[in-house]
Length: 102
Image (cartoon, rainbow, N blue to C red):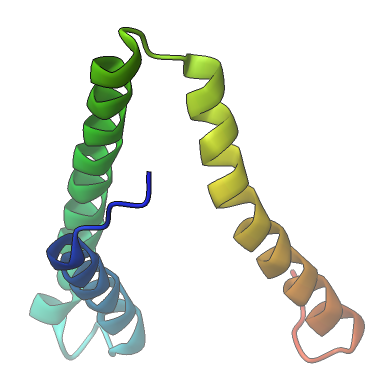
C-alpha cells in the first residue's frame, strides 16, 4: 500500500510544527502559543486514526478480513526503527557527555 495522500502529509507536518513551536517558546511570555502543542498532538492523532482506519478498510475490502497480526507487524516495522535510532543517538550523546540524563 503505497498510496499517499499529500494533503495529509502536509497537515501532519503542520501538526508537528505546532508541537515544535510550543516547545521552543517561552511559555511564561506566550501562554496562548503554548496551547499550540495540544492542538498539534490532537491533529496528529486524528490524522493517524484516519489513516489507520483507511488502511484497515482497504485490507478488508481486498481480502474480506483484517489481520491484526499483520497490522501490528507493519506498525512495528514503521515505528521501531526510528525509535531505536533515536535511543541509540541518545545513548551515544550520553556516553560522550554531550547530554546528561538525570
